[in-house]
Length: 419
Ligand SMILES: Nc1ncnc2c1ncn2[C@@H]1O[C@H](COP(=O)(O)OP(=O)(O)OP(=O)(O)O)[C@@H](O)[C@H]1O
Image 1 (cartoon, rainbow, N blue to C red):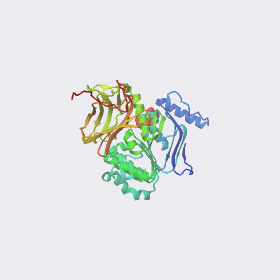
Image 2 (tube, rainbow, N blue to C red):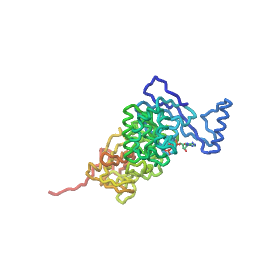
Image 3 (cartoon, protein in one colour):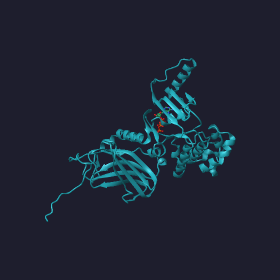
Image 4 (tube, rainbow, N blue to C red):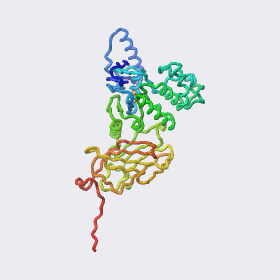
């Protein structure tokens, strides 16, 4: 069910049509189904593969999309959403139960740590083995060999067996091999998360270069910030279904909204972000967002005209001297217009963060927003180096007074002076 694309549409590299894949949670049952399937195939009886047998479930259901030359597509979704299954089907490692995947050109899957490496062979031997599997001839590999080692930065260990490499070194070598075959399509399943920050930056720069040259890629990441930086378009999968496809910002917004709706604590006014492994962190991660009153109680909805604290809980893996917290608030009603944009940097308030859990508070002596539903984009960075971003922290402002004839709340005090 993996087919070549016909030459009519020269920019189309991957076409996924109504792809579904089912798995069985029970190993014994799964083996039994496997034997059954082989037998029915041998006697030529085709069993309907679009129905589930006991204990089976859809890991992917009716997923369709296309990838064109030079496109960077993000793939997001919670654990078990079906992201890796989709990449494994595209790379031909497993077959879909229904639907078709058509691929054109050289495809480099980076979907497991040290993908395709033989642990007992040396780095040097593995480069030759790996790159020839990915479609290069021996002279072509020899011509690129030094570039691969330089990029991976593992020259010292090149004649040691790969089993002695750290996971970061194996990931570097895997990435270096994949990008130096100059593929038409790269499939990247979180493997970039393993390297250190310098290497990750180098990888993203290389990806940008490859894109300019026409390489398309699909990037799976649990870090929305990375997807936002790298991909204009994204797919959001949940329980095997394609929930939303389109502009990354809108797709991430929907993902985060669903996350906050799924969290039982939403009603309590707090949004928890899924925890990222340290290896995926860019230094400081946003852990939760909420409003609190002056006594430190969480507010389910801040009150217009009353004091409130916007509290951003972070987990920091390193010290940051001049962190900058940005808050961009838009109204959900109307045309999503920008209502407020505040950054600690423009207030000349550098925030010093120490490693560990910290809570950054923005104190608002009065909430000036009118009653309504808002969404806030909140980011934390230092200079041009971004750490984390939350696209849509949705909150409601309530009002105890009538404010509907105004555009904002004006705090005031009244008095009469005798002259
Ligand atoms: N070989 C398999 N046998 C049975 N179930 C499987 C198999 N491979 C994956 N699954 C199940 O299919 C579902 C989708 O898994 P998949 O690995 O594609 O999710 P994912 O979105 O990549 O998750 P994560 O973000 O945790 O990597 C999960 O429920 C998983 O347990």
